[in-house]
Image 1 (tube, rainbow, N blue to C red):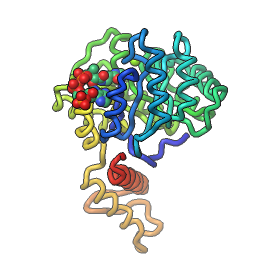
Image 2 (image 1 turned 30 degrees about the vertical axis):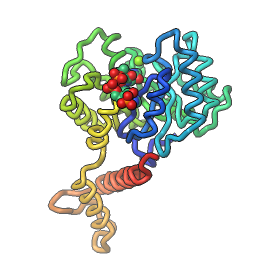
Image 3 (image 1 turned 60 degrees about the horizontal axis):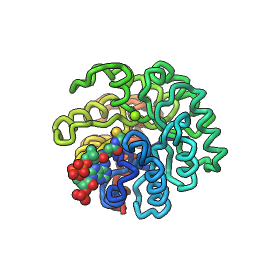
Image 4 (image 1 turned 120 degrees about the vertical axis):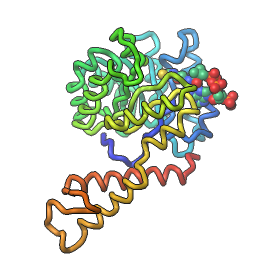
Length: 298
Ligand code: COA
Ligand code: MG
């Protein structure tokens, strides 16, 4: 699978799968991706009802251009196998699996998806939220070469619990996990999605954490409340001046006098062919965002 920016993944909103009203409300929200959750947000007694509600909502559709991801319970739980069958049958864009720890886990999940009849186009996304996943991040990412693996989603709440670490505004306890996950994702052409920000009322704190995630290289951020979408979309969109510079770089390298050159000056800045690659990526992401916004996600 490729993580090329054919669609934006700035804002990825989780919602509890057993809340019908919330699944309905999502049809009106400007999130790029909707994450229908069967795992952490659903109490054990409600797991079967959530599975049925999420499968029905996914099949019924009405979510416009928004990407649909179903987070199932782990295959080693009482609910995981039934979740996987129901999720594959419902036909989302991707299935998100929690608590993976090894490359072998990825191969086993991919085989289970194939056995359940999943098409090759179904994305396998996994949560990076276990200490062993952080230590095994290279072999987990490398499994993408022969499987559907397409994205890493940081599970910072579970990481905090497992590490026995404290959350601080600078997220110092998680910096290693965050940066290693981005490095491994990029090495194997995976999406890298940042963890959630729990303090729903604190929009300044959310913005700071979005900016930190963007600085670290993440494509977007998982969210827990609609009030978090707008800021996240803004921070993870290329800034207008960056888009203008990208167009200038592409135009400059296209000039006949710059043909065959490896380094030129554009608007006073040293610009190499690697910057041309980056410029093309920025323009592609900006175009994907414009297309998404024009689709109105509806
Ligand atoms: N997705 C879609 N809609 C949501 C939403 C979400 N994650 N969270 C809240 N809403 C909706 C509510 O249904 C409500 O809709 P309404 O105005 O039509 O009635 C509106 O947004 C305002 O909600 P609010 O009253 O502020 O929040 P709440 O007290 O109902 O819910 C939470 C708070 C934290 C329980 C809820 O936001 C939530 O469940 N978040 C997701 C949790 C999750 O999925 N966790 C797993 C991953 S970490
Ligand atoms: Mg978790």
